[in-house]
Image (cartoon, rainbow, N blue to C red; front, top):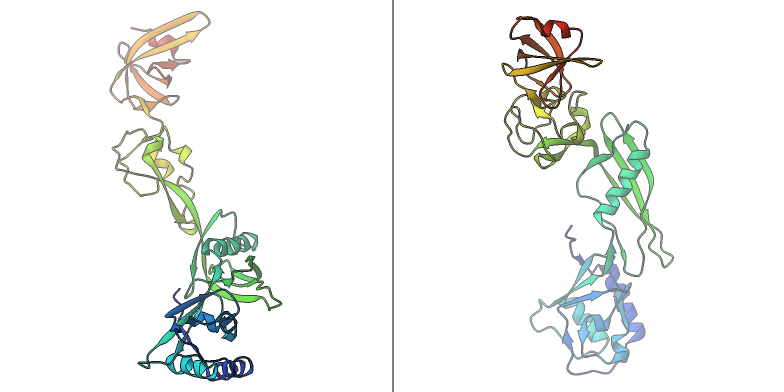
Length: 330
C-alpha cells in the first residue's frame, strides 16, 4: 500500500522551532551546506543532518522534529526548511521556493502471509468452521498492513476475533508491541473467509476409456459449499482409473465418471475357466459387456449359447463358478 506523504503540521512546526531555539540558537553560519532531496531515517527523531549535508557533526546531530511512523513519509517544504535554517543560523536558503525534503521512516513490515496465518489459525479454532484445511481470505477494503520500528522484532497476535460461519464474515483485532515503552500498535481488519478444498482435475482433454495417470492431474481450489458427496476429492481415487466418458480439463470429476480400466471389451471373444479341485474346464464365449479386472461380466457360450456370469481376471480370462459344467456343453 502506498502511503501518502504527511505534511508538517502547525503544531509540529511549533515543536520544531522550540527545539531549534532551545538547542541551536547560537550556531554560527556555515558554508557548503546542501539540502537533501530525501532522507531515510530509522530513529524516532529527525535530525538537522537528515535534512542538510555539510553540517558540522554537533549541529547535524541536533533533533529537528519527530520522525513519521515506521513505514510512513512526511514532506518538509521550502518555507519550513528556511525557518529551520534561519533559526539554526545555517547558511542555506531556498532559491526557488519549491525545495522540499521527503523524510521516510524505515520499519519492519510484517509479511502478509504471516497476518493471513494468524487469521486462519483463529478460524480453525472458531466454532462452526468444520474440518476445512484451507481458507481463502478476501479482506474488506485494503489488506491489513503492520509496520514497526526496525529495532523491534514484530510478533503480532490476534486479541479479538469474531466469525459468522453462516455468512463466512470475520473481523479481527491484531496487536503488535512497538517497544520503547509505547502502547501496542493495533490493526483492525475484516472480510470473508471462504472454506476451500483442493480437488483433482484433468490437465488436458482425455477420451473415453483413457486411463488416468499422475501426470494427467492438477489440483484446483473449490469452495467447500459447492462440493457434493459424488465429487472426487482425492487424486488417488482417479489414478489408474479409466474414464467412462470424455474428460475435460479443469472440471471436477464425479465418482460415476471413472471406473476400472477395461480388460474385456463388449463383443470380444474370451476364454471361460472353471476350476474345482484338480478339475479345470475351459470354453470360448462372447463377452456381452465391457468389464475391468475384478468386475463381473456376462459371457455367451459360443457352443451351447448359454449365458454365464464370471469374474474378469487380469489376463482377460473369465473365472466362472457354479456355471462351470454348462460351459463344457456342446
